[in-house]
Image (cartoon, rainbow, N blue to C red):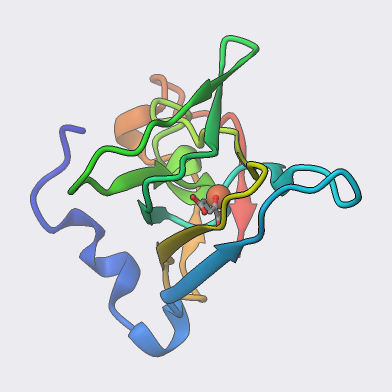
Length: 142
Ligand SMILES: O=C(O)CCC(=O)C(=O)O
Ligand SMILES: [Fe+2]
C-alpha cells in the first residue's frame, strides 16, 4: 500500500473502544421450507475480517456482476477488506460484496475475527490515496 510499517497501529491503540470480535458461525442445511440464504449479500463494515471456513463451501463473492464461489482451501484464511479500509484507501482497496449460500444436507461452520478501529478515530481517505486537491470521494465519521 506504500504506507510505512505499523501505520495502522494508531487506529487500534485503544483496544477497549475498537472492539475487535470473534464469532463462530453455524449454518444449517438448506431446506425447501427455509431456502438457502445463509447470509444475504453485504459488505463488511469494519476494517478487516479474517474468515476460516470448513470444507463445505458456500461463501461467494460478487465479481463483475457474477457470484464466484470462494472454494475452501485447506489451511488458508480468507481476509476480507472492510468499508473502513475502503474509505481510508479512497477505494483503491475494495470492500467486496459477498454472501453465504447454504447447501442441502450439509451443516457449514466458519469462524470470523473482525478487526475494527478505535471508536474515536476519524475515517476519511488518506492523503496518500487522494488527488492533488486532496478531495475525498466519501467521508464517514464513526
Ligand atoms: O461465514 C462466512 O464464511 C462469512 C461470514 C461473513 O461474511 C460475515 O460474518 O460477515
Ligand atoms: Fe461478511
